[in-house]
Structures are given as structure tokens and as C-alpha cells.
Image (cartoon, rainbow, N blue to C red; front, side, top):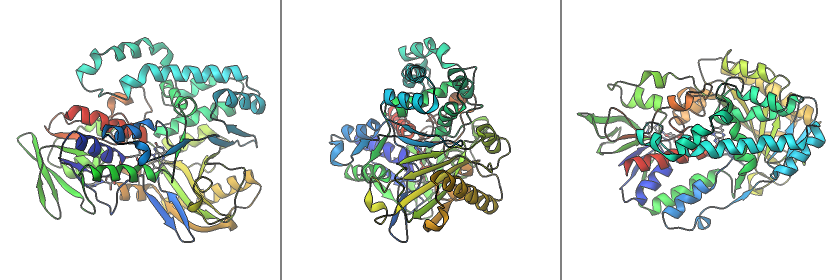
Length: 485
Ligand code: FAD
């Protein structure tokens, strides 16, 4: 069988199917694996994880090694992060998100004057919503009747009143913390974990903080890229063949059945094909003569990102692995992204620094800054102008918060924008997470993990069910493998 694309979803699918005894060939357009989860180096000795930086639910990676009868720790190690995030609010307040929920709640009470009990109650509710729904919405195909006949569905239905399907995330957070806009902003930010807008997304997504605060944020030894590296090592040991720089140009079909793939090099026979390519170009480019599910493909896209990779000649003791510099007006920021399709002049800035944990990621006394701003997916905006405007705004924001001019400290720089993300990964418009979750039916409107029209065609990765982000891509691989077997 063939997998089209060596993103994290494709690699995990290849591992699962190889464990089941399939002969798997992975076709990858780029010169190496990982897709959005790649790494880059800049002159002067700086290494960066190119895409994802936050890692949750690490057992989903361990599980792949265990399935293959291996000890995960022989391949891949990680530690729980504590603290998780350093927050810098626009009014100058700083807040540390500690891994321990009670310690975090006490910090919120001390810094924001919101009772710790309210914070704990909110986090517990988030945990309950996650427990009630994750089995149904994340772990199974939503497009097979048998899913709806299981006990998990009854559990999810029973939890419906808690999920708040008719209120938005922002409304939920405002009701929980009516006296502090900063805490509302902090919890609203979790909508961006799947590229959504807290002012539109249903309150169901208020379960996302549980992933980080309840279950933990983790740091893989060597950085996020180590996840892809260790899984490719495992896949190769299991006999998976990776064919790099060999993009699939067409998925071949006959009489409603997949028959193979065509690349520039050759035509290959396969009765099973799993596409890890974004589902929109899979239909538009690889299956041009097949009817496409237009309603599904036309769902609004998730946000994209503008990333500045900076080698910085200084160590900031107040910064950790994850750092957030909030904007003044969050509502305006999301209106800019989702309604005006542009970047706010005052964006929230995320800075990820791994050199504190992996010293080889920067020279001594320096740091590797991955600086990210949420932006709309590419619709032909004037990106060079937006990059210039945003770079200046980012520098002003972080320099003010840190009390030091950061611009003269930048020794090396690289920029990745939505058209660049689209070009490198084939993601439609450079959207990070496929379609957005800005309405309550979004989970059901994502493309299923299989084709309803073509026998032998399956889909994994961030643009299909259950969604984007490392854990959900790993779950898509689990669902696909279950459907095939
Ligand atoms: P992708 O990474 O999309 O890879 C698809 C692969 O298919 C690519 O290698 C591409 O070259 C290949 N391909 C495409 N077309 C073809 C073809 N025709 N033939 C052969 N190969 C082809 N997630 C988190 O969990 N935490 C985060 O902190 C986080 N932050 C992010 C920040 C950024 C800047 C980005 C870009 C993403 C982030 N994400 C994060 C999202 C996460 O990275 C993705 O959801 C996930 O990596 C997507 O994996 P995927 O399996 O969908 O494949």
C-alpha cells in the first residue's frame, strides 16, 4: 500500500500498517520527512523546530513503539514542562503558568486577583468535558454508523449541557471570569490551538486547556523534530520504504477502486492508498476527474502563521520555552484574521525558545527564537508589506515587555509565511489545521478518513477528521489503520 506524504500523520499511519504486516511505501514530495514538523538551521549555529512547538498527549507517540514491540524510551524521551508558559499581558502584568493546577491557580489569584477556587473549578469543568467527549469525537470515525451505537456516544450526549454548544468559547470564559479580561484572554487563546476564533468557536473547545493544564505539556529531548525522526527510524526498521523527492501526481482508479499512483518517475500498482496530503489538493490535483465533496472542501480554513526565526545574541532569564506577549485588543485581532483577512497592527506574539533545554540549539549566551503570529490563510494578500508591518510590531511589543531593544540582538533570520507554508507542505492556503472549528458542526463537516466513492482510498493528517495538531494527526492514523484492518 502507498502513503502520500511523510507528515506526522503519514509516518504514523505507515508504522501502524507495517506493524499489521502491510508492505508500505511512503511517497514524499520534499527531500525529507516531517512536513510541517521539520527543522531548520541558520548560520551562526542556531537550530529551530520549523512548525509545531507545543507537545501534548505524548502517550500517542509511545503507543506506536509499543505496538511494534519496542521500548519507546530506546527511541524517544521527553519531560513534563514546568512552568508551561510565561504570559506577558498588555498592561505589563506577568503571569507564570505552572504545571501544577493548584500552583497555577494560586499564581492567578496573586497576580490577577481572581479567586484560585474559580480557576480550579474552570479547569475541572474543562477536564470533565474532555473526558466525556474525547472518546467519541477524537478517537473514532464520525462517519461510520457503528460509532453512534457505542456507549461512548451516550456518555457524550449526557455531557451535552456542559459542552455549551450554543455559546462561544469567549462567552464561556467571560461567564467564568467576569471580573478579569486578562484571564478571559488567556483561556480564549486556546482556540488558536486548532486555528480557530474564540469569538466564534463553540464553548466545546474550552476543553483544550485541559490538555495542557490537566494532562501536561511536554518537551521532547532534542526538540519536536525528534518525534518525526524517531518514528521514521521505527518505520524503516519495520520495512517501510520512503521515496523522497517523488511527489505523487495522480491517484489512479478504475471502476470505483484505487489501482495505484503515478509519479514523474513511474506508475505503481497499489490497492490501498492513504493520502496525508491536504484533502483539498488531494481532490483538486491528484483526483481531477473524480467528483469532489464540494461542501466539505469549501469549509472555512483555519488560521495560518507568520513565523520569524531569529538567532538572538542574548539570554533572557525571564523567558521559558513557551512565551506569550498578548495584544491589547484580542477581539480586534481575531476580526482582522477571520473577517478582514489581514494581520492586526497589534498582534499577540508567541515566542518559543528551545536552547534553554537543548543547549546545542544556539551558541553559548545566545537563544533561538521561533516568533509566531496568527494570521489568515493565503488569499493573495500583500505578504511582503504585511511581513514588514508585523516585524516592526513584534519587535516593538517584545522590546517593550522585556525592557530591551531586541532588533540589534538579531544575528540570523528566516521568515515563513502562508504562501511558503502552502508551497512546502501543500496545505491549502497554508492553513495550519485544515478547516477551522468556528461553528458547532465543524467536527462533523471535516472530511472523513475514508473515501465514500473510491474503494481503497483513505485520508490521514491535519486536514481531515479528527483535526490538526500533532495528537489529532496521530489519532487520524489510528482511525485509518482501524478502518483498513
Ligand atoms: P503535513 O505536515 O501537512 O505534511 C504533509 C506532507 O505531505 C508534507 O511532507 C508534504 O511535502 C507531503 N506531500 C504533499 N503533497 C504530496 C504529494 N502529492 N506527494 C508526496 N508528498 C506530498 N501542532 C501542535 O500539535 N502543536 C503546535 O505547537 C503546533 N504549532 C504549529 C506551528 C506551525 C508554524 C505549523 C506550520 C503547524 C503547527 N502545528 C502544531 C500543527 C501541526 O504541525 C500539524 O497539524 C501537523 O504536523 C500536520 O501533519 P500532517 O500529518 O497533516 O502532515
